[in-house]
Each structure stands twice: as structure tokens, then as C-alpha cells.
Length: 279
Image 1 (cartoon, rainbow, N blue to C red):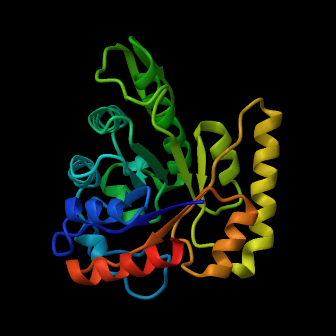
Image 2 (image 1 turned 30 degrees about the horizontal axis):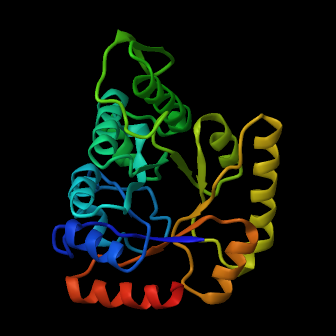
Image 3 (image 1 turned 135 degrees about the horizontal axis):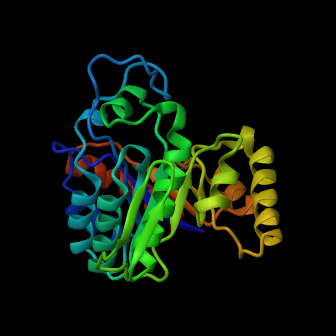
């Protein structure tokens, strides 16, 4: 397995460029940054982690700006979104951001996507939470047209544009891999519909047997559909030797460890402990 790191890149934590350099120097292969455009003060959507919403959600940089800094500071490290909230984004602008970052980084971008949980945040972007899954799928499909066609067009329920030019194209062909995030009962359908990889979250030993079965069935369905092997990256993987061994046995290809949004020395110490675990 390969190992990566994910962190909310906040303005008062270790800066993205330094984090990327230190991550790369310790042998990790990828770095992910999450996304939240803003957090409405009046909010009814419960935090999925339980309890109060951590302050980092309202203090994070724009992921594409922070990832550009990370890419410019490194040479081999893959950089990516974990996750990009595509259901509340303009797909034409987002396609441009993805293609630009992938082009500038020499094909090192990983496009982690998800529908999100904060309904008030979505509403401020004009996104109806009830249709966010359909909108996410359509947005990604429209972006793929822009990345792969000299004259791209798309006509759907949420996205509609006539034949258009959009450069640069991504450096990676046909486009950066789309990692579909989520653990829900229909996430495999989304992976097969518009994704290239599955990015489940936080599976522990108690759920490993069920998870391994899902990985196996996903790959069987992909083979039946004439597709190649579907890679799996574990988001917020457990930094525990027994769990890591179980991930490998289940067919996981990459594990992303969460690192708290803290100042430089605290983060570097955490990276050292993770590197010792995986080295």
C-alpha cells in the first residue's frame, strides 16, 4: 500500500508549502486538502463527527490555492482534494481549476469528490440538498467533457453549455482520477457511473469484513462492465498496524492519515510518528 496525509489547511496552522515538502520528504506519496467555502452561523445540519463543529471547518484555505502552493513546493508528491464539494460548485470554473493545477503540477492531481453534508452551506450556493447526488454526478460528467474534448458541450438537468473551448487540458490523460468519497449504500453505483476510484472513510477493524466484501463486489461489477481494477483509497485511515494489515488484505491501495491543523512543530512530530509506522 501507499500512504498519504490529509489536513485542513488553515491560515493559523503549518503552511501548505511546508507541509507538502515535509510530507514528501518522509516518503508519503500524496497530500489531500478538504473544502468548505464557509460555515453559516445558523446551522441545523449536525456535524457527522458528533458534538460541536471543529473550528478548522470555518478557517480553511481554498483547496485549489493551497494545493497549488503544495504542488509548487514538491516534485513527486500527488496533491488532491479530499473532498471537493462539487455539488455546490460551478462545473465550468471547477474544470478549469482542476485542469490548471494538474497541468502545472505535471499530472500530480487527485480529484476527490463528494456531495457534502452541510445543507445550509449548499443552500447558500443555490444547491438543493435533495438533488445533490444527481448534481454531483452531472457536474463531474460535464467536467470530463471539458477536459477531454477540443470542442466540449453538455446538456443536462443542471448543467447546460453549447460547444465550447477550454484550455489547458489536464496533463494526465484522459484526465485526473476522480476519487468518489463516501460509505453510503449506493456509493459503489456512483464510482461505476462517473468515478475512477473509491475513497471510503474511517473503516475500523469491527467493520472490516463487510468492507472487504464491498471492495470485492465493486471490482466484480467493474469487471462485468468491462472496466479495469478499481483502486481504493482509505480516507482517515486508522494508524494502527493491525488495521493497516487488514486494509491491505481487503484490497486497499492507499491510506490517508488525518493530521490535526496545528503549528509546524506539532504537525512535524505527528508526521514523524506516522512515517515510523509505515516505514
